[in-house]
Length: 158
Image 1: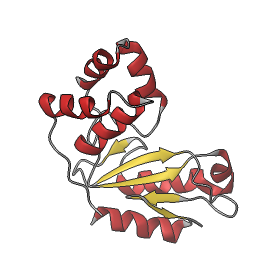
Image 2 (image 1 turned 180 degrees about the horizontal axis):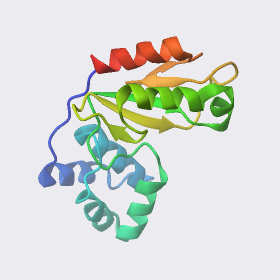
Image 3 (image 1 turned 90 degrees about the horizontal axis):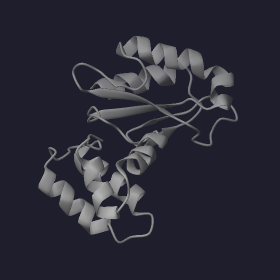
Image 4 (image 1 turned 60 degrees about the horizontal axis):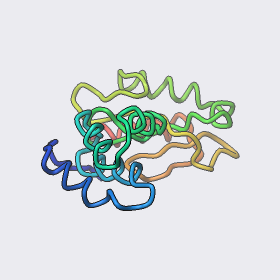
């Protein structure tokens, strides 16, 4: 599954914000909607959200930075998330994360130069009883080992 996003456009951003600004918990809803449309939350959207919701920029920025799923830049065509929760780390997740970083040539939290793969942390997919887990483009993969990780990385690089 690859994703196609709209290029950032202030008018479209304002439209998205207006569609959601009356909802309960509008800050999170709007941030998710912007990221779904643009692939990230553009910096100019933060003051727009604050103004629409009568919040300070700091309040909106605080919500944006608190949640790990929000991006400051567009993601690559594929997003590979590795579980970084303590249970997965204890089951070998640190070595697998280092392996993924080495294979992709990037640290977690970055996108490859060719924009094919974004490598991100995720904190608990609920599958850590036996081995670390991961997610590729929304598909959860449990019982992660070197072979399964290598296959995910290869799939993401296509």
